[in-house]
Image (tube, rainbow, N blue to C red; front, side, top):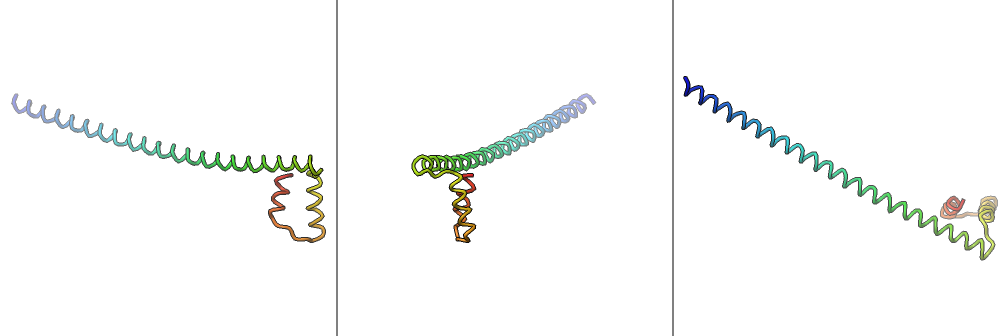
Length: 110
């Protein structure tokens, strides 16, 4: 009986070690997958942030250019924001066609 018990004990111990090893491998695999998902999510967030930042920089550059141009017109030709508004209001009153670019410019200036 002693030999049989010893063999049974060794077999159970080997099985337990194998189960622990498999569990550790499974945990490691899940952790690696989670890390890869987190890394991918971080990369996507960084790309989104970079695109948003580039769009904002372009938007600010455009508005800064409009502001500089409006300031230049005001100083050199005495054309102010109210004058621009009244000019487009007059065009609309007279029914003259003007492009949407003019309306966009007007909206951006105001």
